[in-house]
Amino acid sequence: MPKPSSSSLRSNGQNGKYTPTNYAATKNEVGVFTTPGYSEDIKPLWKFKNAEEAGKSAEGIWKLFEGYRWDRDKNDFVGMDICRKFIQMGRTRSLRYALRPGGRKYDPSTGKERKRTGKVYDQGKLDGAEIYEKWLGKCWDNMVYRKAWESWREGKELSEAVDDDDVKDQSVVRVAQGEGDEKDHKETKKRKRPVKDEPVVKVKDHSGPKKRTKKS
Image 1 (spheres, rainbow, N blue to C red):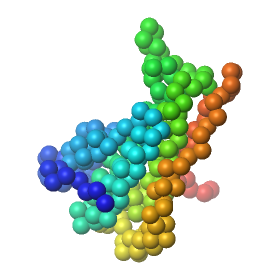
Image 2: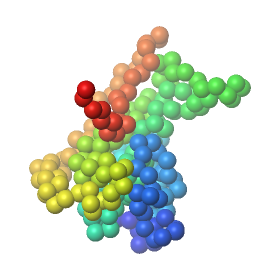
Image 3: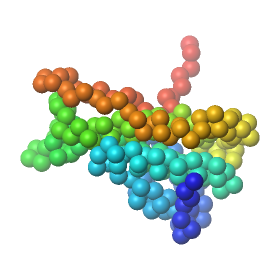
Image 4: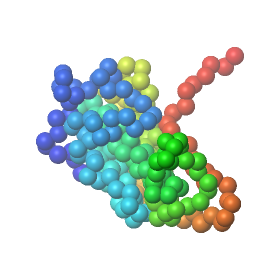
């Protein structure tokens, strides 16, 4: 399993350690390129030129995610979170190029955001977005990461958020899935090319845990 390079500092450059006070757990992609100790290790794996590259990229980033997840002695929630953000950005960036000409989200003449019409300008990137989407869902479905993310939002670090039962349960799932698990995620159903005037392409919501509401 790939591990971060030895040159990584795994610190925020201030007090030598990331904590809930200096690294926020968010659903967006903030900090994906600017988090020392992680961004420089993960970025070289991040590609979205076509479906084949997206598949290799997502699988490589997932393996790093796994490495950070089992590195509990270093409270490496941040490593898992940055991996998830790169996978999420692979999906959003692929969709931008797939559904907008030249990947331009805003009209250069007016500065206004261009609306999606349902037309696909790059089928390869649309297929790549579907691949990234599957791996993004896998990140949020991981019980260790999800519980750590929710607890980090409450100001608790990974060592406080994850107990031994969580790790044991996840180990059972990992063994049961075996080596074929990643291969299954590499195979995706190709979306049919839309015909003229087809409705806007819809994508699943993998934005992370939903905010809990109290029952009245």
